[in-house]
Amino acid sequence: MRARTGGGTVVAERRDGDPRERQDGIGWVTRAVFPDSRLRLSVSREQPAATRRDAAGAVTVRYAVVPSVERARFLLPLASRRVGAASTWAYNALRPPRVRLNRLAVGLLAGVGATGAAGMPVLTVSVPAGVDPAEVLLVDHLASVLGGRLHAAIGIRPPDPHHKPTLQLFDDRGRPRGYAKIGWNDATRSMVRAEAAALRGLPRDGGDLPDAPRLLGEVGWGDLAVTVVEPMPAGVRGLRRPEEPRTAAMLAVARRGGAPNPARPLRGSPFLADLTARAEVAGGPVRDAVAALADRDGEVTLEFGDWHGDWVPWNLGTHRGRLIAWDWENGGTDRPVGFDLAHQGFQTALSLGGRPAAEAAEQMRGLLDRQGSDVGLDGVRQRLVGDAYLIELWLRTAELAAGGGGWSPKLHPALLDLLAARLR
Image 1 (cartoon, helix red, strand yellow):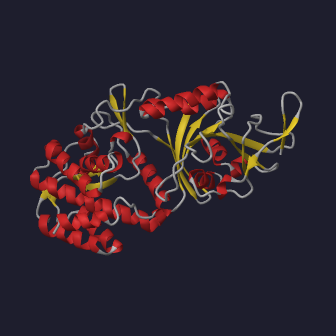
Image 2 (image 1 turned 60 degrees about the vertical axis):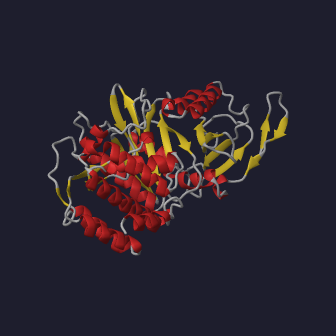
């Protein structure tokens, strides 16, 4: 392809191949977001004009690849300077300081139209003339569902069968319109559908219940399952003391904002029946772990209720004094009260602290010991909840693997060894 400079000289414009052929982050994300073979994708080292429709009627959408194809972190929409800047500044207060500064700098560049001068290449997505963009472009399809024209900032993460492409949706004025998650294999399709169901059924009664985004739409598009939720308030902020468990909110979630649920024995509970059935499907040592838990603690009574399923500081924020919780895709019912507390202790150490599973379990035990009484757990019930949570986590891991999500190297096989030691 050739481009004309301002002085009239015609120079060659360098274009790379279709990024969908790559095996890195930008490769798997573009395959998921732009799957239609009629689309033409290419990467240019120069910034063409931002015209959406050419004289022949073909539609073209362009994104700046930030910061480069090899180290891509997100695709910034180049529909206008306002949209480009807004897509980097939205919810920046939730990000770590270093990421916040980088996003601020990129937003300033986008606001003055200088992303090309900073060396950021451009991804061009071309729709052939005569093809309805809503038929082949997911963002245009979502716009037809939600109303009004939309532009997407697209997050890029390393290829992982657990990861879901995410789209932050903005209107022409740069105002947030929604947040979309894309399920592209069996495991991730199940997760985005579960989140839609959870948000649809959440009580909205205030009190100690955390606020949550409302469901805007649940869309099936080809092989993709897409859940769209409303944007968070512009003033949302991260937690001041992220290590401090919000136990009152955890209890409110477990009880759906109501009174405590009556305690009942583990044996005969829907929860134990669910663990047993799922362990039979998974097979292997997890069946022994469930049987050992029932033998040891079958007669222990405890309260069951709902849980968020991924209660960690990076899924929480505050706005006008209210707690906000998002990412409800792993929630469920009939779980021991205290599961969210156990999850925060374990996952904060595992994911944020980089600790191995055994050390993360010790961090979980310590948190349950310190604050388990806040959610009605004495020593015996703290042990039961901790071990039951680890079984639940193992089954979730196995089910993701069976759905095409692959095994988590942090949990497989370490979690089975840990369960065997704890329940011996």
